[in-house]
Length: 546
Image 1: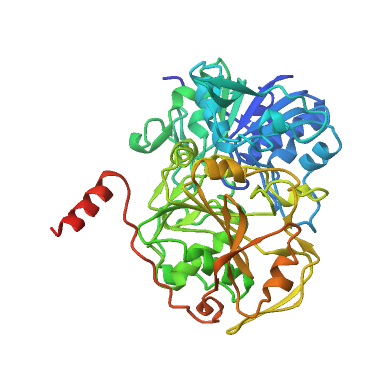
Image 2: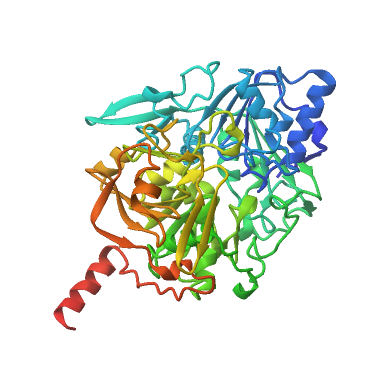
């Protein structure tokens, strides 16, 4: 077996040629091969080469907190096209990443496609298949009839197409063949075998490596350390050395955003759940509590970034920290998902899967609920989560959102009813809206469709919207208010603050006052009946009295 080349990041950058398609395994700060990307940027700064690259990112590369990622490549002349599931994001007050500036100024062709579909695309490329046929993204901004995932006017509509197969409409994403894959691991041996023991997830490293290697391309792996040849446990090798051409060593690579290394993220240590700090008493906590009441013990639940990410921590405070198995698109199964921009990792995970395999579960609807955020909701039940005009860097893009919502049996969107400066008091008696936000999030038409409400109804999905002041459901007749917070006036604070006509349930109820307590609310979770044959067997046995 040939020994792998050990190069500096700057030397590795010399392997990349003009016009190459470069695919990168990363999820914001998690698993980002930042040193190698920095080397490419340095080479271009010094030599004006390589030029006209296409960069592919199933999930974002880099963050806004010190791991620059794709921003190392975001230079006119260096980057021609970017195809990404998501992009670096952060607060509106922060300086936008360079890649967003290039997109806004029409300096780069840019696409935003579902992360799971991009992972599938790599598998298709590795097997020399023409592309991916899927229903993910139908009726959204990804659909070629609605823009085809294009992020600016410079971008041509030439990757996603509408096809009909067996009298059904499908989206077809054409394969993009990489010339170079840049991945990251923890340890490489002298033959290029890679282990991921300190990583929060292997992400898409294997699939990206297959895609490039099987098409005559290069695979560059950034690692923290080297080991002697064949000293690694073969059961722990996630990417075999036969796929790896060069290794770049960066002993200082960060595990994820703001985190150099936490063994509880990589499954090397299990911390007591009691060590997790309580969620601060706030409107967000009230919403997370209400979302938590939609769940049952024993369920498998997907979780998205935003207010909904507080739900596992609320359950933990209520003594149900392990009652639900959380699944994150980055690969963690179980444990307690982390908050803020370390989201994507879990403390004490039960398993850490490859992202592509996790998306097999998610796209196939193999879970009970998904808890997600929203920017806007419109009269058709559509949700915009990816596009905030004039402040686009506040959102990461579609990510796995479209993959997840295409098949989730039940979806709970969680977020505030209005946006902007406001004063809403929260106490044991409910809410007091002293000064409401100037902007409603319930608009006649969303700025861009990330989730299609009418398609969800046609698929039989149950959709709930949880806000601080009310709970709504998507029904065939329209969005219907089903619960209202104590202290809130239905006409003034809900119906009049929506830019479209809301319906009101004949069975309108007050939200449980326990949600508004400062201390523990005494939450109990019903037992999930399970699914499939075992659930049917249990129901039959119970019904027969056995």
